[in-house]
Length: 244
Image 1 (spheres, rainbow, N blue to C red):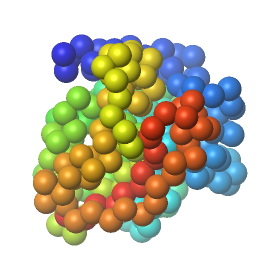
Image 2 (tube, one colour):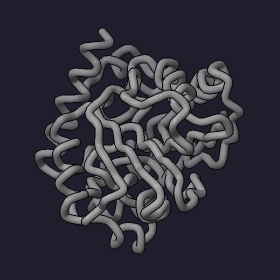
Image 3 (tube, rainbow, N blue to C red):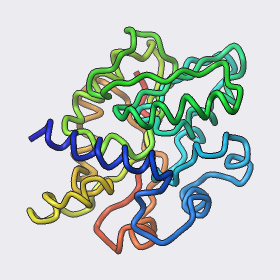
């Protein structure tokens, strides 16, 4: 079942990469979507055209308080939007790595990096449940509405803990449920790839992070996103910073 889920997600996001379109359930432009979840007009102008696909449910780079020279990892980096925003903040002495399971997204991100002249980024094909990253090598992890797509979220948080340096942190923007879904909703492919069917109840999500050993700080919760993008479903976008 886990492999089947990954194949469904991979196929959908391959299609999004090819079409350069959002998976959002509302009829909005990518710019409008991004501004509604926390990005500024300056953010949108500062990255290569084609890197923002209107995906995500928040702005994890805004939580990260990145410093010049930081090594940053983006889980589920897509076409590179958050990677490029992070790269602008960490400067030439810093380094940002994007990991994504979709070949088409990796190809698109590499092309965007070339177009933007970015020398402090790299993109790796990989699974966020089994990261192609060395132990204790990363200062900050960012991730934007991706962990909900992973079948084994505990493995994702274990991997994040493994690759972070002592004192490092993971900055998460993700969808969590406020009420359990029906069996029919859980098996809906569109809801799965739309970041809903694979989501956990809020308490379960937070407990999984704590179980790995992280200290968890909930920064904010956005319930308005439910009506804006998810037809009023019982969910919210949660912003978390968790420290190793």
